[in-house]
Image (cartoon, rainbow over all chains, first blue to last red; front, side):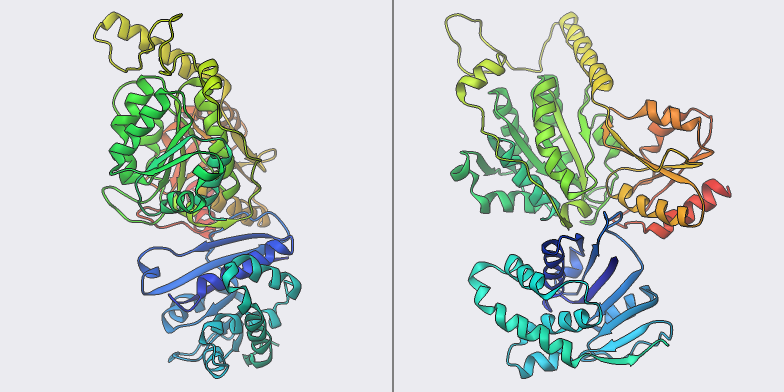
Length: 184
Length: 354
């Protein structure tokens, strides 16, 4: 198993930390992982993205241009990465703020209204965990016990009290993700 | 762990006595990690933010002269500022470790990854006939491993060791296994292990003088001969490389660092198409793995070097190969990282079909 994922959105949406939690969870589940962020000008106010690879084997290149899954959280990232999903791959996006919806016919497309859901939970900060839940529903590559360990590892100790809220958000994400375009 | 953090933690665990640096993207996490980790409480190691790169390298010069395990880190423009000090350290034959997390240039360039400092690193970025051992990590694990290996080689040869990384390896996170904490040298051990160091004159020996200056040309030439003999010994004993899928290869890629990781994926993609390609990854850039490349040149039909530069290492590959087979370069510049599919394309158009 090798899963090559790009997560892309605005800086501040929790893109990098979502990738980090995914990567740490992979480590806890004894997988090989790599986490390659964008850093620099785009991280300082524009779009941010991170490439996460989770695999049973040694990872060759941490830098890739074709992805099994793209998780897209703003329009700029949609413009940039819709075309980078491998044929037959998966695109997950939050329609909030998206004006040009994805058009590809050769991939599976899912929507997750994570921003609205997080707001209605009264916890806008768990937005990224709602999205992560949606992803894990479709690609259960990591068991939930390792996700918990991944949360423990990547959140500072003083925030460990928030882990149950994060787990709740992940569960919510699993419930609300919905198919938009399905390959036969 | 990020590559920069792994290097910093490994330096503490290697028993380093002091780090002197000045922040610059994309290597600032080295000093940030060290400051947060407070190694002065763990091992007594000093971490100091100097007022400039020039000050930092001269603090390293001073620490090394006292027989201490000292290091510094920076990124390309900052490393350029350190060159005078590096040349002095090489001339005075002092051990130290220098990390360059390379970003695109020239000038201030960009903060994105590049490999355009190969010439500076391997051919002497400062003045004079000197060489450094240059270690090129291609993973977060090697960022950690080479901090310790760097100190061991530096003290073995009384020579600066450069760890030549880049922004991608510095910033990315991977799994890493760290060595156990090695104790710092005690004052007694320093006096015993490094009898040349300026540890305070005792009655039973001459003064130790650390300098790179000798105005007597005859003596300066002798000193240069001794340095060259040392560099030759490094070439005989310290050449390191990794071979991936080379046994049956018809074509070869030579790449180091981040480019080697990308090329490894390209090798997989090409082999899936039935094209037998191998990867030779130099781990030491000086000494360069000339011999093995020369040997592989008898086996393969063509060689592609992949570098994030206009083509610098290719000169050393060509020296190793002579004119026996075609050698071409593929690379991106200015902070752009090539993709595995671009490398596949370059292999097909420049080498196989070219």
